[in-house]
Structure formats: structure tokens, C-alpha cells
Image 1 (cartoon, rainbow, N blue to C red):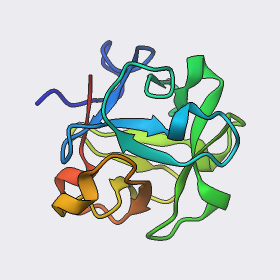
Image 2: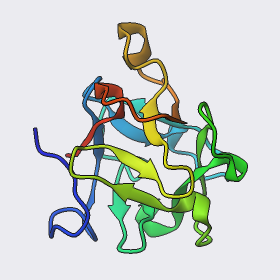
Image 3: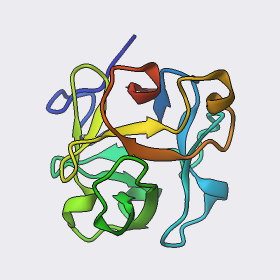
Length: 146
């Protein structure tokens, strides 16, 4: 499995899909929407701008050509915090660490980007939302670049 890692020429600055190891589906902004608060989910990879992620040197995960960021809802730092789309503003809740083991952690919370319930087959279907959760090594917390 090819894993993302900060600092490699293949991760920072490139724009590619992030694929969940548990489902083989892409990180996706719901229905191609750009409204602040749009749900971030997994969906079959289709190559749209709502699935094209740019990992920045500042630790942001940007979509839509860099205009929108993955954001931990309302600066929350607890298990179950939803991950949403929001205009990039440099906030701590929009900073992510892309780790050599394939996990992505919120730098503010220390929690992993997690496919909700993705440790079960029913949690790996199109439309399953992403959340922050304590890192546990599960495939639903591992990502690779497409």
C-alpha cells in the first residue's frame, strides 16, 4: 500500500484523491457542494474537484483548487467531532499531520481522521461521514494517495 507522508515530493503540493484503506473509497465533499459546513464523507472515486486534495506545507488539506479546507467542526477536540468543509482561514482546527503509517491526525486535537463506523462493513458505504476519533490503528483511519 502506498501511504502519504509529509515532506515527500509525492505528498505535499500535489493534488490527488485520498483513499480510505477500509473502503477503497475517496474522501469527498458531499454532492460537490462548497458551502461552509458541507459534510466530508467517503464516496466512490470519480475524479471530481470535490475529491482532489492538496496537502499543503502548512498542514492543510485543501479541496476545490485550494479554496476550501478540511475543518474540525467548531474547534472541537473530542471523539466524534465531525469533519466539514470550510473556507481556509489558517485556524488550528484546519491543520493536519500526515503520518508515515497512513493516518492523518488533527494537530489541534491529536485525533485521527476516521471513517465513522468504518471498522464494520456497514460503515464503508458511499456517504459515510468522516469524524475525529482516538487513533487505534484501524484501516478506517488509514489513507493513501490515489
